[in-house]
Amino acid sequence: MSTDSILILINMQEISFKYSQFVIGLLIFVFSYSTLFAQEKDSVKNSYVWVLEEGYIPQEVEFDTLINQFHTYNPIEKNSFSNSFLGNIGAEYNSNIFMDELGKPHSDFLHEKPFDAYLLTPDNQKFYFTKRPYIELKYTMSTKKWNENNLGVLYTQNINKKLNIGLLYDLISADGVFPRSKTSKHSMSFFTSYTGDKYSIHAAVLRNKIKLQESGGILSSTVTDPDLSLPQINNASSILYKSNFFISQEYKFGKDVVKIIDDTLKQTVYTERGKLNYILNYEHNYRLHFDDDDLSGFYDSIYISPNWTTDSVSLKLLDNTLSWTFREMKVGDAIMMNSFGAGYQILNNYNFKGYIVINDGDNYNSLSAHFNSIGTFNKFRYKLKTKYFIQGYKSADYLGTFDLEKDFVLKQSLSTLNLNLEVSNRTPSFFEQYYYSNHFLWDNNDFNKKNTAKLKFGFSIPKKELNIELAYAQLNNYIYFDSLAPRQLETTLGVLSVKGQKEFKLGKFHSLNKIVWQLADNTEAVSIPEVVLYNNLYLDLQYKKAAHLHVGYELYYSTEFYALSFMPATGQFYQDRDGISGGFAIINIFADIRIQSVLLFMKFENVGFQFFNSDYYYLANNYPLNPTIFKFGVSWRFKD
Image (cartoon, rainbow, N blue to C red; front, side, top):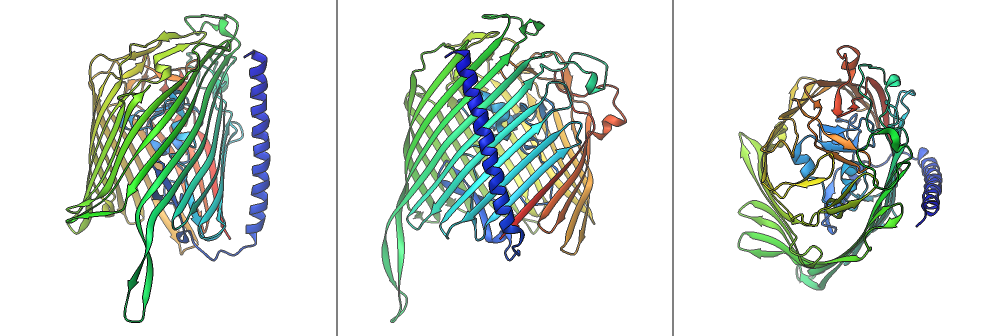
């Protein structure tokens, strides 16, 4: 494929996005106009939302309409309260809490992992039931100088009691504080669901596109004025693209049974004998990296051209899963529901350089079997999920998780104990095994499968808002990146952590506190702070039912640790034990406001920079934390 062909393809993608934005704008106008004159006769409690666990098991989740922590709008801060990232919203990130990073969903396309919190995927796609049309508009902005704008649009409505349609659009556009840190993200989802008595279907078309300027970080300087900072790379950029077509179908088998209620009344009841589920997921991913100024000396090696770089990787996936779920079974005091099935997966991987296909693009097929069980026994709730690849490219890969919970009363408070065990054995990703580009070249066909065993034990008292978790992970053949290539540990890596969360209330004052202590037995491959904490203190004020206000501060802190570095050409964080991060406090001041169905926040981020800093704080090597910034956000909800 020629360079001109690639540029035409990119231009077509841009035109497609502009057309999508026009359609979304038109929909917003039409639906907003129709609801502005509608009186609110219903509440969100008459609606509900769910995701599909394992692609077919509905799990109800909450509407995101609470005032609590509304100012925490950045997706990475919702996923983890301590992160190494590149400073600007929408850019790559890595959680400093090892169990959070390890818990990111597995993907064969490694390049999406640093963007996990930003991407719409079948795993986090929400489906809705709403008695009336529901529209939510979210908008966040910063001061004009930094030009950060985030727009979120959700429209969904039930055509009838069984059929729902919806549209979700999310935009991030941020110039960034430091030079060449601009980010742009467009995510869109068209979704629908039909939940009948016997037949149900969930479907979604999802699309994500993230464009980034790449700076390589800033040149070392004692200057604390972002306008005077200089980037290490001047003409580099990257594009990440991910799209999915997802469809999940279910058919329930059973028969009508006539039940005699009394001498004159009979009732026909449908008795389910089992259900058949079919899931189809098609996925297309690619990453492009451009650099027209490789003479800067940023890279150690040049394999093809000293004047330009146009690296790209691509992965396509087609996944089919068929499963059968038996009807609920009762054995003594135990109640269980079991399902088993099979899956067939096709992977197609490409690695381009100069638009020459390096591998032959052959299909990599894998056949798997799975067994799931959910139920209760002796007042314990359990959930078991297993998957094993029988043959093909991923032969002998497996995944198993077991969750166990039990409620009990402690000092008149309902409490819960939970145990989670997870084991996996996975083939390294294509990107970890081999890569050919202008600046990096590796062939790791001798990499062994990655084996992980993770155990978590938790205790919670919801009424007292207390959660404690002890976790241990043992990883064999762990893969990490250094400055040159992926490396695989020949020894076992062990990581231990303790996490606690507690909210205190004294009158109208509330204090939310989180703390993590963690320890890794190999600091060459894993660099994490030993202690991470978060403190949030706010005043809770309410005026009847019309207005609600939270005003306070939040503080983030971690002990010192070796900062991660970031390589723009590969899009990966890596270990180099060069600079230090942590050992400083990040303080934000915020106000969260709710006026009927409208939520607002005002926030000053990193206010300490104005008073205490003589130099930048670095979240990753050469990537400083932004100085003090004011941000404002609002969310409107319309229910016709």
